[in-house]
Amino acid sequence: MALVDHIGKTPLVRLERVTRGLVPPEVEIWAKLESFNPGGSVKDRAAWSIIQDAENSGRLRPGMLLLDSSSGNTGIAYGMIAAARGHRLVLCLPKNANRERKQLLAAYGVEVIETDPLEGSDGAIRQARALVRDYPERYLYLDQYSNPANWLAHYHGTATELWAQTQGRISHWVAGLGTTGTFVGTSRRLKELNPEIHCAAVQPDSPYHGLEGLKHLETAIIPAIYDPQLVDQHLAAPTEESILLLRRLAREEGILVGPSAAAALWGAIQVGQNLKQGVVVTLFPDGGERYLSEAHLWT
Ligand code: PMP
Image (cartoon, rainbow, N blue to C red; front, side, top):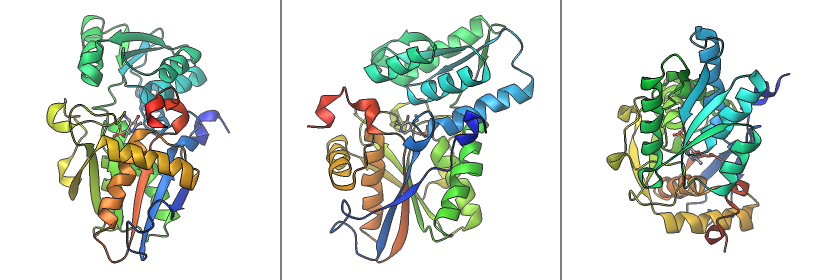
């Protein structure tokens, strides 16, 4: 099997200690650990789906460069897959992306264009759009925010896996919103499999947050793939409370994750605490190794 064939099929684990006393005993909380992907995050799924689509569509002509914007994980996933498939990649990245991200991108040989840190991921989107407008022959714009191949990766992959891993018992699905691909694709398929499944979307509670990878949609460019009709419940995660859960996950469950995973767990607990029983499933987008240089998270 090739490297890309090992994307997906990630483990689903039951959380017990970190949720004890916070949700009723008949409420199960499960988390899908996306750090088990070969590129270390959930974005391997979307990046492979998007690059495969570009390869198959015939739009990727010889000599063209793949181009996109990313706040980190998608860029790393693209970098790994571009190397594995023999493509060249240019990435627009906010200048304040953390050290581990920049090191990983350099290691995979990605050409990075740094964008205004004050404009965050939206600044990187604008830069990528400007480049493809000025040089349409040179760049193939992958556009993870508008590309259906992003959510389709979760429709075919993540949702199908969760259905099988819970033997169809999943009653509640909770996920953070970034490009919204994870939430949209998984929710769409789960609702087809069982229209009763309750889908809750987690966003940061303010535009200035520390939940890397998540978007505050009210104040951000809304991704074209976003479908608000799939959202049964919106949850606004506070950074500080999420970070406390990040530490507890590491110390009480042995699960090292990034801040957006902790926000997802915060959301799953909000959903779970109002139930008598249920199978609440969430997804942890990446692992904590990618954030070790951010000392405030861990101590
Ligand atoms: N968390 C992290 C750490 C991410 O990198 C991303 C992707 N931007 C997300 C959450 C959100 O996933 P999605 O883009 O599928 O909404």
